[in-house]
Length: 199
Image (cartoon, rainbow, N blue to C red; front, side, top):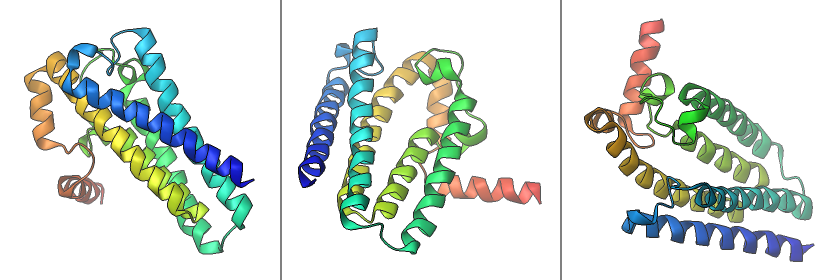
C-alpha cells in the first residue's frame, strides 16, 4: 500500500512542479500566453495539471487515514468544519464572479460581496479546504502539498493580475490598492465594519 502512497505523492510533485514551472515561465515571458490561457489547448493543460495535483493531494490524505488509522476526534472536529466552510465560501465566490468571468471572459470587474475582502476569495477558500484536509488526515505530507497549492495559487494570481490590469485599467488598479490579493488586516477591518452595520 505504501507504493500507492509514494505514487500519489510522486504524481502530485510532478504535476505541481510542471505547473509551477509553466506559470513562472509565463510570468517572466507573458507572450507565451499560458495563463490566463491564450488558447483552449493551454487552458486544458493548465487545468489538467492543476486538477491532477489536487486529486493526488486528496488521494494522499485518504491513504494516510487508511494506512495509519482514522486518527482522533479533534482532527475531525477542527478539520471538517474548516473544509465545509471553505467549500461554502468557494461556491459563494464563484457564484458571485459568474461562470464566464471564472474562465477569463471580460464580463465586468467584480469587486463587491466576498470580493470586497479578497481579490481571490476562491483561492483563499481552496487553501483553507486543503488545510482542513491536512488536519483531518493528520499528515505533514498533506500539509506540505497544501503549501505547494499556495505557491500555485500565488503564481495564478500574479499572472491574472497582469491580464486584469490590461483589461480593466485604472479600475482594477484602484481595486488592487484597497483589497488584498488574499487576506490581510484590511479584510478583517472590512468584516468588522460589515458585521457592525448588520447589528
